[in-house]
Length: 65
Image 1 (cartoon, rainbow, N blue to C red):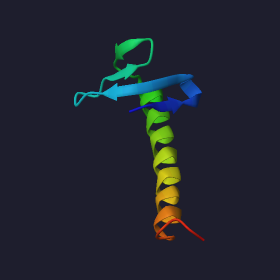
Image 2: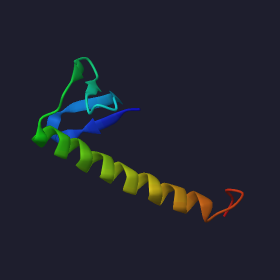
Image 3: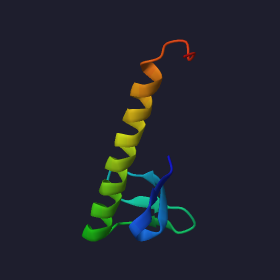
């Protein structure tokens, strides 16, 4: 996984069940409330973009016009 969090200028590359995240080039950390909110916001935006992409691709079976 790679999730860029613009407000933190960091990329989340892994998460654990206990709420810690591993940031690219920084290692494991427990995010503050503000950081958690930023990560959640970025993840929600990414999910929305990926959902839109899937809908567009699935609407055109075969990939040709």
